[in-house]
Image (tube, rainbow, N blue to C red):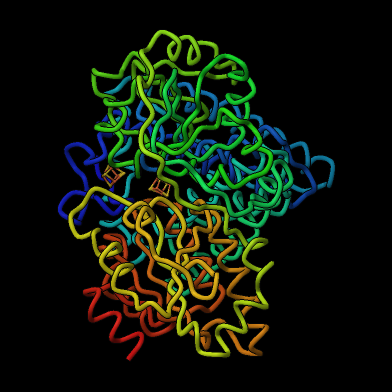
Length: 547
Ligand code: SF4
Ligand code: SF4
């Protein structure tokens, strides 16, 4: 196997014998094969759409297939096998759709090859051999490191966008242009002779479409649950039976809250579910009791100690320990071999497991943090913020956030946040916030110094806030007293970075290490065009930013 799609990739170059994440070679091969057949679907779907024909099952499946290959989502070769078989069926459907559209419009269908006609092996040995033929390493050997690396940049960006588009469509927000772009971009990735400029152009287009998709997801979340409002969240347990919900899928959380009403079970958020507490449509449930634990990489220890049931919605899952294997459940696209999966939002088995477990035997201390500073809440006090900047009470804004991870060096974020001077505001989002979100940062004239904007996709909110401030000061985002420090781990962070680059935002600091798929030549281009830079030390970066 070869995989270098996330930040924790082995030796900073690539996982080859097994994934640092726990992905085994069979799972890795299954994901490579699924991606390849999905490109084949898109080759037909792209051409069919150009002739006015599309199919909703195909559109949604392409999102799900890409999302299933994101880091820490699907570790189950059996589930992936079923998806490969479905992909082959849908490729035939897409081919028929294209040929039918050609017949109706008097065109001669193109004879497609490559992923359009390729047949996945039935057995594990065959899949492993095929993955080696179609995988990154063979393309690196054939096309060179730069081209293959840029193809992967586009691919990983698409995977991240697919995750957001899938969440949005679950809540009823879809856009035909977005589906068309997925097919167009995956078709583009089947070309063997793209130039560096074409690939960079496509990467920025991924960023552009991601902005649109994060907007769709924002509309989906706020449409379903209202605009987030600043909300105090308990971070210690309360006595009683308990379920903890992790991942990003708010619909799963809502359904679980409905199904646990009146059952004497407290529901806790974990990881990226924390922002759920800010949504009026979710915080109204009195048994949404608080937040438990921290970011995804601490889950094994935290779930082991949790005296109730655990529901893992979309990423990031780690190998469950024996201590909680019989009380952890997955939903959506998440899968781990042997872990019970809830395919239909009937959470009865989760509730039964929670009732059978001991629950918390006593209340923890009274400790709270505040969440819910989405664009609506922050822009609601924009006058106050602008006045504070004009008067000099606020000197600078730092956006410190992104994905967290297990590698050493990630304490950079907590050190930086604590070293930020008292006259500066810290905006944060995604699970990287757990490095510092339980510290007291105080306020500036009533404006909290730490503003938790939400999940990683709420980067959309951060962008709206930055653009509104730029408008208020009659300038552009690059001229604002704002610095972006992003920690990245997996492919959603890649698409967010591409969105920021598409917007022309410069001087982004990226860490804890740069992506292995970005070659020195490509990095030079990014530095030249966008002044992107790696993080150094909190002290040196603060000095460089504030002078
Ligand atoms: S997802 Fe990351 S850790 Fe897992 S195999 Fe790929 S590069 Fe390695
Ligand atoms: S923000 Fe990224 S690393 Fe964190 S839980 Fe979400 S997908 Fe995983």
